[in-house]
Length: 207
Ligand SMILES: N[C@@H](CCC(=O)N[C@@H](CS)C(=O)NCC(=O)O)C(=O)O
Image 1: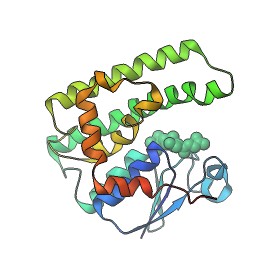
Image 2: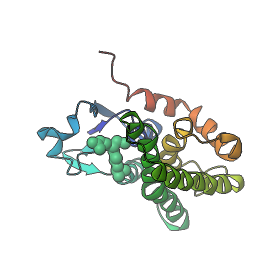
Image 3: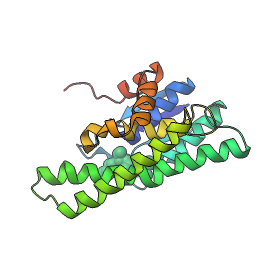
């Protein structure tokens, strides 16, 4: 029995998209981050970092979106090769998302939106994260110029992990005319039924 605690955010979308792509039966529990539900005792007891996504598989709690995607793919035996160079390649691009894309795009988002709205914008931070984010889009542009998918020669959990972040380009002030290969890859993935269903699953019902 799989229960996913998640929310309408890039890290939250990764897990619901993977569950949909892998056709694994599951239950979704939405965590209202704006209401601070991630800090409530019941959730904090199983999520030491107070973050979503969190997967519970038969009473066993798994945190960190990358670990969740690996767990789900291994469970279903799809979207992550079982061994060898192809598995290693998928894991490299998965970890690049978790270690670089998520933190850098997340910081740029914060300084462009949250900090600006509270009147605490910081030009140096915007420059620093803006430059690094554009550099990362360039890394993916080059990769996707030579490959249809990020790794292993096939659609994988590396694509699923990266799509919800790179698709947020409008909010990050990224000009996609400079990254046509990334734009085509975003459109290919965004057109998948499982991706649409996965994103829709994270929407809170209107109050
Ligand atoms: N490294 C973590 C990051 C998870 C994360 O940052 N989740 C955000 C939503 S995208 C969150 O729960 N934020 C709530 C908070 O920080 O209070 C992962 O990949 O799962």
